Length: 298
Image (cartoon, rainbow, N blue to C red; front, side, top):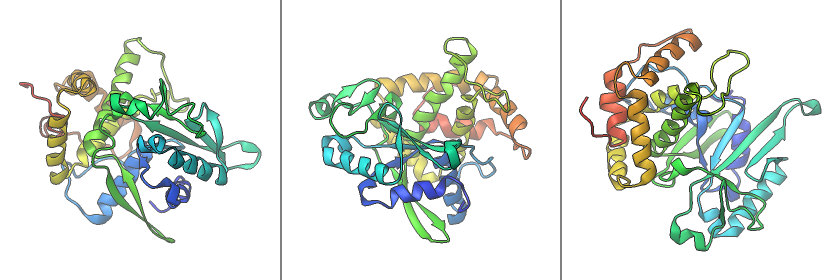
């Protein structure tokens, strides 16, 4: 993992004191957690799983405290300025040129959960941006499915030739909610409800990647994490987004011939030369259904 092309750009951000508390998500975050689990030899729900794929994006989730205490957001913006990032889209997406004539660049996406009612007194919420117009220079792309992302984020260790670094990633419960919602967009795309996003090289929907990411996140569950996920699922049982995502999960994977599971199998065969067998019982019955608190008769 020390040779991952995105790693130096992540490290130069997270080692700055002003970045304390940022949470790494996305496919890159999944890849780093896979490497951490392998190096620490932890037992997980499913042992054989393909490596997560990621684009040239770094997805960071900022806690609401960054805008409740606006000096934190201003400090983080100063870090981005110092490292050479410029606004790419609105004030939640930045890019950093990494090749002559700006032919290539790193994309940095900033996300935030929706402020709760009591937090809106201190944080401006102008969907789809959290914290916009507060004079900090940055906002977070409002992510409704990130409702639990600030609950029990996990610290993982990244080992490089230069040393060890700690980075926060979402708790599996929060991460699964994020990725199930993203995977369901693929189902809506297939039904023609939203415009397609197709990878030019493979011709495969770019949203299909999220379907496999859900499988990888389930595969990485440890016994302790699954127990914690059950507790978090109970905490958020009545949350409208949690209820919505549980329904989406059932639609995608609730039975062996569900579209999500069938497409997951096909995608693995198409994209990975070292295709692995996907165990439906482990993935759904003992994994995702339990982690999200889904109570249905299969």
